[in-house]
Length: 379
Image (cartoon, rainbow, N blue to C red; front, side, top):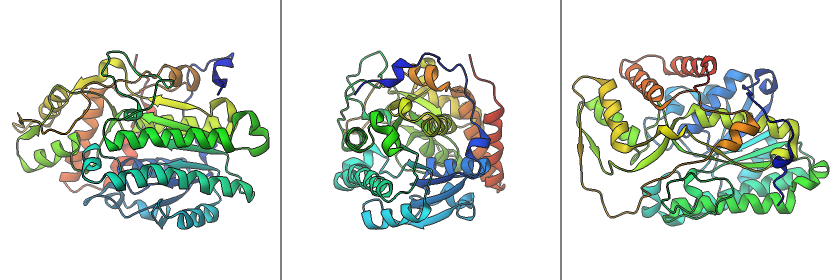
């Protein structure tokens, strides 16, 4: 496919999220009960959107979805993306302007334990989402934009020192990474076959995929994930176990890629075919830090004599080095990170301390969203 964005004459310098665009938009979000989905629902509510969520029950206990009482803010439809009929029914009834697909089995280590579930959710679930959108289009439901959220791990990781670009090959050593590479290929196939940018005037649906780095933030309770494991230990006053201290990841606060998804979705609605591509959303290069650096920084900011210990790694394969090239999003979407990694860790500590003291967490989440929106773009 021709990279149509390359033909753009005027590159964007900065494009903040436009509240007037999102006000009263119908947005359909799959996986809205998860960590990222919950933050997205809060943000969309703050922007004045009407949100329909389609998801299983919250994947963790506790969960941000329940702590922030997000079910009071959105129309929530219980369902599994592996059930095409249920997904189609919910999508048709919602009549969305914008679809953001976030439902997934999101954990590398869990994919080793449950590879079949990982592939059926992440691959077949994506097929079902696009099939429901295709049928909705044929029925005249005016969906304008679809964003499929995947991961930086969709790339064939060669452990090289330079960053991966959107044109690099899909791959994946473990079932999770492989399934997300497959999800990207499904997206490309449906875009090419049914929502081709060159036929946009006929079908009117702009399809894009979004690949984010390692997302961190308050309210993540998933097991076998670095920040939740740290917070769990810190709240109990225990030393944090560190399994792979030298592994380097592109860490970023959860609001960073979510802002990218929102900007991308707006561009898809307003300019359609030009932005119907894949997009990377990751931190600045110097915020790709080793695991031990992140844990040490978190312990220092937490105080209370917080500590960590290095433990032997198990035999499960995990990538050592991974970095994204986000220059396309910065040049053509005007997106770029706002909070550096140290600020992201500050926000995590603030969130966890507020939770520990029994504060009203929905209010705290809205406070952090508004602080992010008011923040200056970092140099």
